Image 1: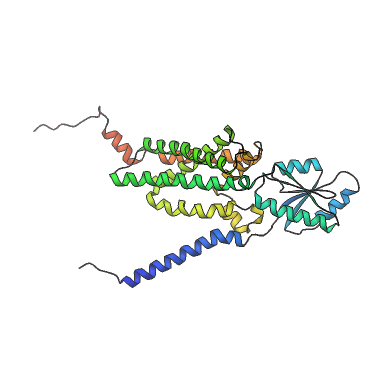
Image 2: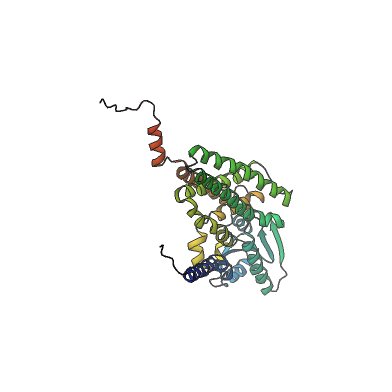
Length: 332
């Protein structure tokens, strides 16, 4: 008679597993947001040569570890803002300059700090926004990145399940077709959402190409891991949908240093969302676009290698199908 463990033991194990999942996701998702606080927030204070230089140096001496000030000229300060080296510029005496191409969390806290600095000197702040962003322009980059991840993951998982149902591997050709086709289809879906949410946002070849690169890069990595680990890979790829957006939605200087090092430093969503943010806000030459292209292209190459590299079973099948192999014939 088979050994049956008490149902109560399985119930306790299931409860413990659920609690463990809640703990892990709590730390990795909401914990990143709950512990957000400025830590070395990069800002610039700009002043022309003359008496205002002393005031700029005085402002830069405040902030402690929460703010990292740069004293510069107005022209250089705006260049730093365009390159996202700083999240805002205070042009003395009272102009606060921010950018819609910067992550909204960074822009919001930068504007608060710079406005407070002007008010502390007795001035009335005037806010100027470079590349002003609509609500859709602020939310679309991260939202589209998350949708690309989910759409590609669903396609990869269905391909693996289909292979298991028919009892054999889908094959390199099917995996390659799936990666390319889901990249094309998901790119079309994302482009449609971008137009639906805000028809004024640019949708040229640069944006479409970046969306396609992100989608195929995500699909390749997911397909490669699903091929390597099977459905067990969902335990890694699924939670990333919850973890990565919560982290990528913040600028690193607002994250707890532990989250910054362990999660933000590598999450794929930050490369796709920040590169796309610069493109839709009309800053195609921003450094994060170039960085995003390189990282996503690397993901695509690595994923294709995992997904298409012939495994042992494939090599054995190819050897078995070779028509001119030597066949030993015994004579009795």
